[in-house]
Image (cartoon, rainbow, N blue to C red; front, side):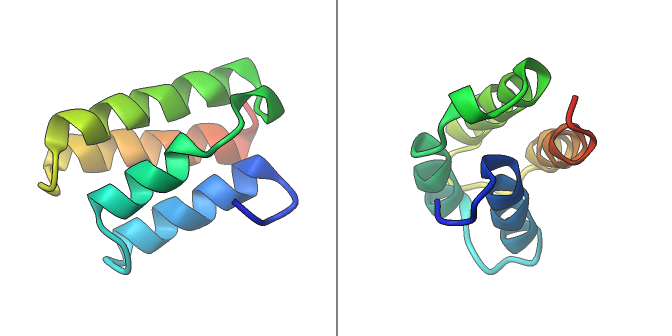
Length: 80
């Protein structure tokens, strides 16, 4: 992840997934490299939930995965 702030980088990745520029495997791989220590506790928890949802969904773009992803964006944007 290259942007200065980890939360911004993850939001950017999630936005790319929503726009269908990347798929589940690419998002999961990028999140695997995310440094949770740079996030607030609530943000780190949301990212972990997203990782779990991605693992469960496999290659499928499920409605549940999209809900978790949007909640992750919200947590990151609000700095919760």
